Picture 1 (spheres, helix red, strand yellow):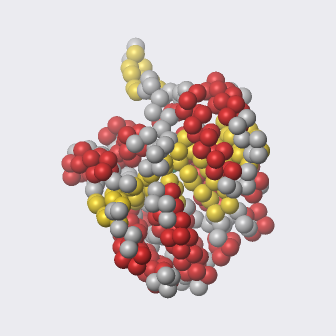
Picture 2: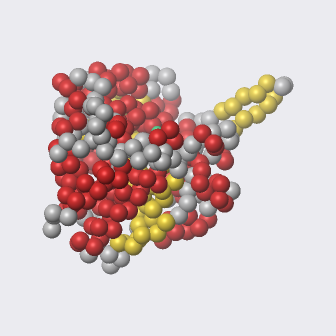
Picture 3: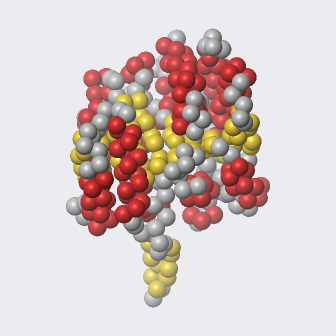
Length: 359
Ligand code: IPM
Ligand code: MG
């Protein structure tokens, strides 16, 4: 069987980190006869410059033919003044919506070797392993009505945070199912002291929880959750939350692990079709300098092997190889303690070299 994988390098450091993923996938493909076929397409700012739109038709149709997508990052200062509908980010949001990728999995794991890279003291983050489940196709990002209007010469703008019960139910199930295979705790994060949409969120999550008697469920307001993540991050196992809260909390959680350059993500629909991407974004300030950390993208590839290709062994090997290279002391700039660090390509190469030893 062949497995079609669509690579969308995108903008900023996207192409550099996806290049490391590409080389690694090609090597694994050969080593283990995985039958993977790679396709390439444009998305984001580069797509706007070449075709006038952030998600060209051809990209969408290749995505429909693919079993999974690996995306680098989108966005950059040259497109920042555009309105939301014509920005690079719109391409990513359309992809999420087109394929109904409502379940965004953002693990934050601190590798023992990187304890000193965290901005928090070791005792607060050693062995940290939490999973943020972010709802990805609803809430403020997509709610209607939205837009800008001028009335009596006064300009106003609006977005709508809206969820129906079916959307809450399906993401809650994902969180409980994942917690079942982990630490068996779900903390649902909302703003139910102020927002009706959060009250519905809490009501539905509580209802779905009745089907999961072995899971411990707690609720937390988002402002408190932001504080607790910094104060006592190890209390969390699975954090379940809506789109915007998840966007914000996942960046904070990422930093606990030392660098956002270490964090992968998977965005899935009901059919296990997934879009895999590093959490870090396009980082235009360091683009093209061979200093970006490719590990977030390689860990995203590992998630792809696990969730879309059903090859947990390959996923484990890749994660293992990354750990070994970190244990050897290799660091990219973002996780280095001193002035000695390796570049994007060298880090990727070292990981592939370790992988060659597996069979
Ligand atoms: C993320 C990013 C995106 C988001 C942007 C690039 C649209 O910040 O994946 O967290 O806001 O969802
Ligand atoms: Mg974000």
